[in-house]
Length: 335
Image (tube, rainbow, N blue to C red; front, side, top):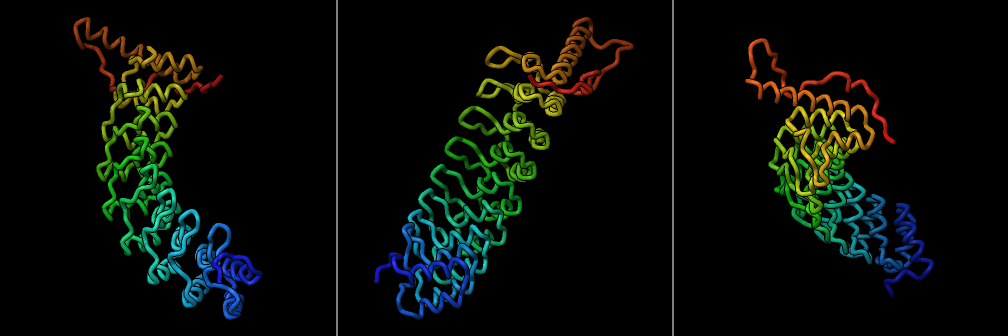
């Protein structure tokens, strides 16, 4: 009998598996008119449909009647892949015990572990790892399960992967590391965890941007706070900019203040010869402009005082990064 789905009975079997209708499933199978692994045009089998819906009883029945746990759709995905995607641990365990390969990958290189990490299914990730899932597997773009977990902000999953030996700095093809992508997405808890496990704070993507630059660009103040604990590069980076330029360009005053307090040079020019102050003025971010202007004025005053004989009697020293007057109360305006 052909495995291709083409009869009314085949359609009924697929619908029963899709809906989790165990009684209909048994009745169609017992009729002898269908193959247990009949397929549709995408090569989807009833077992794949039952697993994708988390229908445990139907999965068991299909396997007992000879369904192939290794059957793959045209995309390369298996029943285990869909069970992992849905977080159906009981179904995944049954499939694994029936011989389903834990690392069978799709055409883009994704394995069941990848989709479990993407969905934040902690129990599923733990189950797959216990069956030997490859924590170092890569998709076609070289993204790892750890990268996927970091991108989606799943801290518990990240801890499991790191405990299983995942490398915190493995980059994607474009040079983006898990730390870089977590910083872009604003996942400060992920950034903190990766840095604690040795992630390199100044890793650079192919466009020359660091994690700090991207966090400053996106306005993720909590991420900037975590990154600054590890003394990242505050000067010019390979893209010809600084994190302070990025924060000024998009009017992120809290981040501008964080970076200045950490020692960022307010007078440093980017590749186009512009300072953060000039950028803020150009973009009409009045509060950022006023803050940087006051800061520049203070630094010039400090420099003049030192040049005139140093800190003398009666002079007051000011803590680096202290606030200035007038800037914080002005509402940012964007043209």
